[in-house]
Length: 255
Image (cartoon, rainbow, N blue to C red; front, side):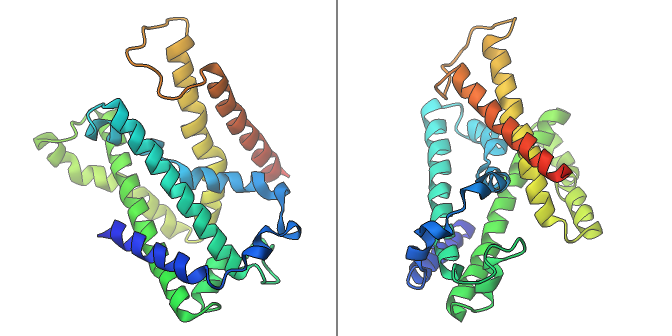
């Protein structure tokens, strides 16, 4: 139901918003700012990260390589296309605003306030709420799986049911308490989380683990072929991308 709601509202937003978006201004040279791309990486990493649900996908698809590849590729490409469409329509509808380059400019809030009509504003509000809920569901499943793995708790059965309330409390209570202490931390958390947390957890550490497994001193026979081609070049590129972002953002935060 939630996924259908997200899909329906998204299609409606794109269909209605495209009619009022100024795509010409969106691609005009004077509105291009490549110097800001690196600053957008933390958000890009956050919105496109899927690594935390990979163990769940592998287990549910019973280790089938072809199905896993299809699920991950399609589950990455489709959201990417949706993000590009969303950004084009949303920014295209507010690109004429004089404050668009301000650091505190919020195009979503501007549209929700009815700048481009109450219908589009209402749809954007509904979509953002549904998107947050569906994203939360995926993260909850991934975190519960991670906690059960670390704690050695089976993923089903009587033992799991016994620990289930504590597992979900461990997922929900810490962020709830933190948000109550500092209600305005969300944007800072996105920036710092993408620049340092996601870059380390989902770029640096997985690449190190793969390198050690494939090329470490105690090399073990690989039971399945690598799913991502490129070998050392791919792994090195991942380290370089993560390292560049961490150093650049760290230098910026330190002034």
